[in-house]
Amino acid sequence: MPAEYSYHPDHHSKLQEWLKSAGPTLGPPITLTNNIDETLPPSDFGFISTYMLSDDTVELPGPEFQSGCDCKPNMGHFVGCEYLELCSCLADATRSRKTNKLFWPYNYKGILKDEILESRDVVYECNPLYPFPSAPTPSIRLTFLSPKGLRTREPLQKGQLIEVYHGELVSEPEAQRRENLRNQASSQHPPSTSTTSTPSRPIPSNTQPSSSTTTTTRRKNFLFSLDKFQTHPHFHTPSMLVVDGEKFGSPARFANHSCEPNARQVVVVNQMGNMYVYKIALFARREIGAWEEVTFDYLDGEVGGEGGDEEAMREGRERCLCAERGCRGWLWE
Image (cartoon, rainbow, N blue to C red; front, side, top):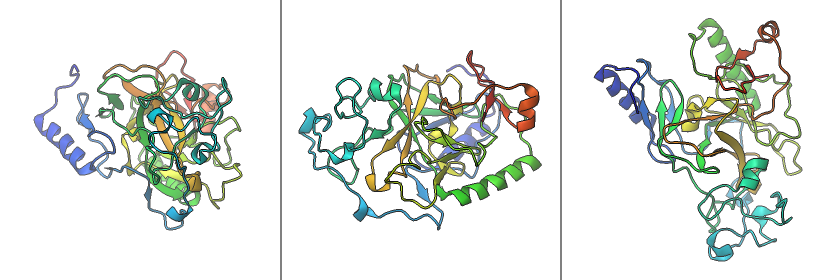
């Protein structure tokens, strides 16, 4: 990878010290480089491999409330129990538009099937507490090119799992409290102009996703509202939960927004007793070349109408800097 900036060896040492202090990731160890300037990633960030329960007001059902199927690994030709109409893990899965049958969402290589990827249906996996092998886990070698986002060090196939967005799992009131504090701090110390597209405006709290929303709502300051199943008959949580990836998270936390992204966020459910605590997984929506930046649409295509500069300033929206041909112009429309 060609260097764009020649920095002092001491800076390289600081980058490696940060990487060591941030801890291990769920997938292969992430690498870190900065050939642009001498900035460092946030010093108070740490990697985690699953959701971190850090809000005393959030209570999740225990293992005794979990359920799974009785499928065995040798069923379905070691691919999945897609031919078993009685598989409880697939009870709520979308049926194939071609065959009207339930089907396992991955092929034998662990690649998400086109029918799921292109329709953006919810992915249902077998519960990890049960013996049947679950879905693929992150195995991609990634590089955080500080401060320019996340890159893959190897070519990716369409439908390949890239990463899962993790963070602290908090209640909606706690997320709002954190968001208000960060907004206040941001107004007192506005960031310098950057060429990255890191989000800085929230979706208004009274804005609900449309019924066609297939994933989840990205908010300001690395917050994701787990709002997919708010109207589902099995949704019994008293308060919507929010994933906060600012202080603790996965490498997906460093992926930038693009209006024409090469990755897509997909809702993955593997705990029917906790289906409102689903995973936000990033899959390649096309073939991605080695060292290409990994990007996804923070709004997942759920946008409003276009507006002019005066309207954007009045609403406090932020200009999108992805520079793609189909750029919408603004974040958080």
